[in-house]
Every structure is written in C-alpha cells, then in structure tokens.
Image 1 (spheres, rainbow, N blue to C red):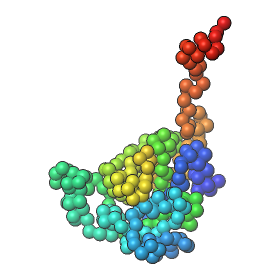
Image 2 (image 1 turned 180 degrees about the vertical axis):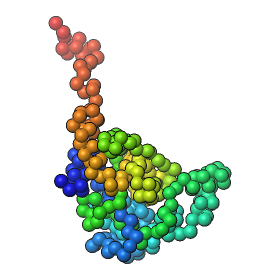
Image 3 (image 1 turned 60 degrees about the horizontal axis):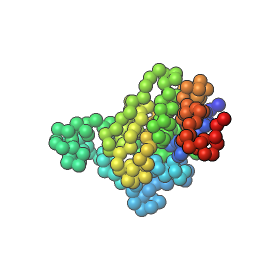
Image 4 (image 1 turned 120 degrees about the vertical axis):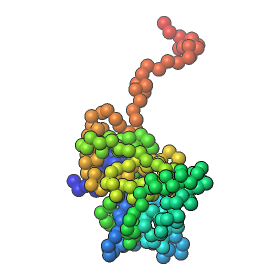
Amino acid sequence: MPTRELFLENVKKYIRPQTDPVAIHLAFGDETPPDGAVMPMDKFGYPLTICQGVSAARRMGMTMVFRKEDHACPPALCAFGYLPTENLLAGKVAMPGYAGNEEAAVKIEAANVLLDEAPKAIWVAPYESAEFEPDIVLVYGNSAQATRMAQGYAYYTGDGVASYTLGRLACASYINKVYVRQEPTIVIPGGGERVFGHTQDDELVFALPARFLETTAKGIEAVHAAGYARYPTGFAGITAQPKMPGKYYKYLMPRK
C-alpha cells in the first residue's frame, strides 16, 4: 500500500483525530503551486497567519499557499527567513510580555529554530487531498492520541519523541524545527494559534518528518494489534463488578 494511503488509513482507524492530518511543504525552487490553492492576499485582500492556514486545511479542507506577502505574523516572517531577525533575537518582542528581563528574552528567542533561507512559499493542505508530497505531516489531537503517535514512531526506531514549547511561535517548532532537524516533535500550541487559528485548549501537535510516515503508520497498527495501548483508551473498570448504594438493594431488589 502506498505510504500516504497507509498512513491516513492507520491514523484514522487507530488514532481517530477530530481533524484531518495536514501536509506541509516548503517550496524553495520554482515549483508550481497546487491547482486551486488559496493565496490569502489574492483571495481575501489581506494576509493570514500560518496557523490560520493550518486550521483551514485540517478543518475546512482548504489548500493554501503562503508567500511572503501572505503572512500576517511578523515573528513568523522572521522565523521563516523573510524579515531581518536582529530585533527578534535581541528580545525586543519577547520583553516584557513573555520575559521579565533582557537575558531571558534573548534566551527565549535564541531557542527558536529560524530558517537560514526563506522558502519561495509554504504549502499547506489536508494530507489526503494534497497534490504534493509533504516535508512534514501534522496530526492534531489530545495527549492520549499524541502518545499513540509516539508509540507508533518508537516501534521501529526505538526513539522517544520530545515535547517542545516556548508558549509562542509554535509554527517555528512544528515546521522549522522538524524540517531542519528531521525529528518528530510534540508541540504545545502557543497563544497566537489559539486566538487566530482556533486551536482548542486540549490539542497538541504531533509533527512528523515525511521520512517516518510509513514506519510510524506500521508501528501504530502493530502496537494496537498487541493490545497494550489503544485509542479510545480502554479502562479496566468498565468490566469490573459495579457496586451500588446499599439502599438500592434494600428497597428495590432485596437479596436472598
């Protein structure tokens, strides 16, 4: 079975996310954008945040292409290499809102993974209907679903999956960090993604480099088949003997 079909089938069957997995591609060359892709400035007359694009893909089935002019978030423009990063890295944005002193602000921004070269565009689409091969696939879900994804990844690699967040600029984590380091990451979305992208409070992002799609899909199925971990979570108490208040038996069903 082709990798895309295998991954989607196993994620839908065993992980059951509420929204579609999202394909991300960083286009550095003269690649032709997918047919019918929405470019925010052309379609709406104003830019959007990349997290809005991810939400539009996973919730509404939209394919979107973000060029430099399509990004509404200045920190994201810096992270993706479109704007100079001097002021960002100096902590001028993080302090005082996210940092109590200059040293902390500089340290926070230095932890972000910034692209050295800006892509011509970033393509975002539901993985199922994407007309391109992704660099990264994002699966949104709760902590139990993220755990199942991590188990699938670890089944053949033996590696754990790190969780990472700075509480902001999550796109630099689930796109840049995963693209550059080629390691899966569980990302806690930041405040901006919740405000603009409508990401829910219980959602995490499992970001997976494309090279691990097949093995992770097979691992998810194998762990399920072993019966050790499944989603939805099976609780042992479901088949335990129920104990009712004593008066239920005294007055309604006297015991012999």
